[in-house]
Length: 127
Image: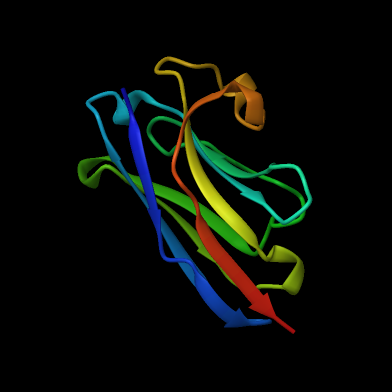
């Protein structure tokens, strides 16, 4: 099983930056497609970014493309989300997640296809 723990959230002003980390346990981490999702109060959880097993492929929601960068370091069992030029509408609880080992890239932006989830970290962007 894959166990995930997020960190790095906080309160920043609009235009600022944050770097989120997701540490994972389990030998399957290096063979698992990973993603970041977020959920604002009263809204559904939405896709933010995903990354392939080796990090060679990435995908981003249009709302964050050009501002956020997803990466992973399998030797450290860690995935990152660098968030720049933050906007108030980025305010949400951010979750890291993993597909089932051997999962398809086709499911990279599908919330309901992710099997493993962290507890979330709060990101608040003030105007």
